Image 1 (cartoon, rainbow, N blue to C red):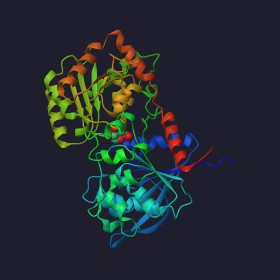
Image 2: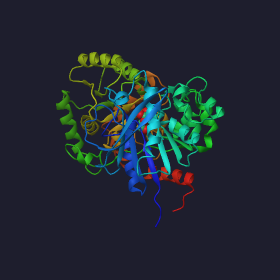
Image 3: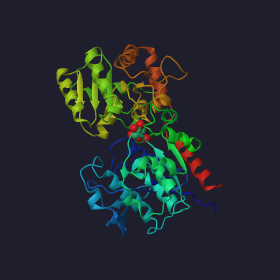
Image 4: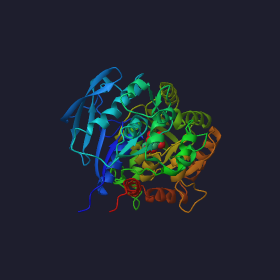
Length: 464
Ligand code: GLC
């Protein structure tokens, strides 16, 4: 019998338990695809305070945190295809939000240590630990310091964010000064640096972003470290859960051969959001209200062109300043603009199915899922050509299979120029081609999962 590869997937977020952004979507969908491809997979995330589900107690043990000990309870949800373990500690994780606390570094140091310790207590010993983003990035460092034969893969979903922890929290591990000094010692140990330097393979969520982070402009000060690891660094484009994001499950179902029903979804969306009934495209944005996402140029563009010839819908949460500005703007344009400040996955789907144009003028975008969700629903993307957006959105003016509109420089005028090209193309024969190409674009997880598996196998010297 062929031995199955065993992978433990570690993340700070996962739908349906906890999500603030794309990381939560990927942590739900990629493990499922790996399972379908024959990997024996388990997942582990923190148990946050707002998760009110009934999980099974597995075990508990103490974790040394500097001069003190903190208790760790392991729970488990077996109801999903991929069994998920939870790291439970009330003090660290029973809080209103997932992140944004002064002690995030300490909280996720606890998480990383607990994940490693958990392996002595559960009946699952992985060949690979697949870590995601900075919250998990001490795991590769710990594995190396304890001379473990478990290999680690570290996926960067966003290089911009990291955390750090004073050395005293790591002193029970036997680490060489050489290893530590590169990770920030004698100051604090930096999570991102630890992940980049100690994992056996690094991936990020598109090839475009991979190339970008090797340069000072996008490298967040880590470009030189990434260049050192260039031969063990791969860009793998994210997929989406095509069953969950599917126009055949829209309120009025439609597909690539029957696009008319999209108009009916548009009419329903207008009714729901109080938009006027006029023959213009609906331009939508579903996003974190965060600098990365280009909210400043969206706001300035809308002000400059005064919502002529289209309607505008924005759904998202985040920066209070952006929420205030957008809500003032929405009250200036009654019947033409709607701004909803919520995290609402079902409303998001109604917007994807009812809108015509989806905008994503990101400053940088490691992968980007919004443009893929939009394309699944035949909604034409207008994006800044960066990272994963560059890899997925071929412009109407070039390429064999154009799906949308893109622009290069991060300025209000370049964005307006691309948006105007989209608005002009609406109601022309080109539009249907763009919609259909976007819908046909391959976005399932099957191929990306096979690329991850190739990496796992190369690390384990595994032959199937
Ligand atoms: C982060 C990135 C986004 C990516 C997502 C999932 O949120 O900013 O570009 O799609 O992670 O990988």
